Length: 640
Image (cartoon, rainbow, N blue to C red):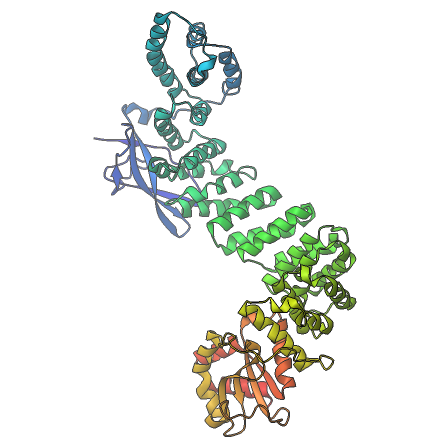
């Protein structure tokens, strides 16, 4: 009969169940069926098996290592106490210094014989010095006696074997961890045995959290060896057993080993999430940044964990210096996550420290955050604009787009309107120093909010600068700028560019196309099939989605193919229905973003009655077959 014994750790959140081919003796004398077991390890004391691990409603089968007992009396005896760590590991460096005084192997052996007891640290120090002496032959004192070498090297093998056994038997786990750190070629072949010994100690809960991390780090560094890759997945037992010892100082270390886990990764993430909920008020900014890095690397999304990050961020605004604040905001962007607490934290920070902020890069980071999540926070934007105007002389022209684009994109009009004139004046002198794509973005941002940089556009389009543009995408942007100013601005003497030929065709968003196919029968019922056209592109302007009408209501017989676009029509006689996707709006607002506001203006100036329809509401009504409500929504929006 084979009897297995292991220690179990009680936890309020986890339950474990052993599985495999033989029976286990548990505290409650339960016989648990074990259906997977193997003994691939060379260590006769080890059995590789699996365990069912339950956290909440999640049950995962995880790898474990089980020690085989030789003496059944151990089952009835008291559990062995883990010896307290003494100062032997601390004295290890002193021992190393002693052995460094040895100039050859005979000196090393002589020093060993003088020791009343060979401790593991003495053995390890001797092994490392032997390795150093053999590696650096120049340090070996020359001896002409050939018997000297033969005697010394004959004894070396036996002495090394004994020294390794001494190290292996040590009760001081830190000494074995020190063995893994050494690069000695004398020890490398034996490192797998030391790892197995450490794994047994993990099973017996003899490693603290820092030692578990140290062991895991060694396994990760050597992840080119499948043996070590499989071993790291078994360390979850040690971390969960040390749950009470995981604190704000070491939780970040455990997060950093997640990338090396496979089978046990999900269980470890769940374990760390629970600890994060408990410890977040005590975690320092540096540690939280490292934890966020792990979430980014692992591409792991958890609303619960991200909510904790947001709560921590809002609560620790006062403790963040500029670089830390920028780093954390950037990481939220990379995580693609925001909520009211993060936005509130940014607003709180910039109100508190806005007048003291020296770095324009930090302001750019905040603006990038607003653009990423389309947050039209007027208080934040106004403070950013004030900083821009006060520090304009220190901001390189290559960074101007980073300030101007968010303002235009979010359709925000700064309290100080001088911002537009001052920026245009600067660009008139230095536009050639600005990336051409950024320059297009700046000019469009002006137009979004009804500011017209006519002097700048005229200068750019008449210069050799424009003739060097070969990108079709950029050419389309310039055609849009030229057309937009021609439609909107009376003072603009355009269009300055010839009719665009050979540019890329513009297609309607596929999401809108699919929706139209679902609601077109309702539109036909309201207006009649011969009065409706879909995805109508206005010719003679430029190839841009700005001039696509999703649904056009027109007089009978004047469809998109027969409509005379050059003929002036009665204003508002034709209706342009625009279906606005969720990303056409600023977050938590009815305000459209700059490009959509410009599109509505253009169509209105071209004589259309422009009506905005919400994509989300249309989808909800069409998918629930509420045709009467859908018809009423359209008619109410049009004003009929």
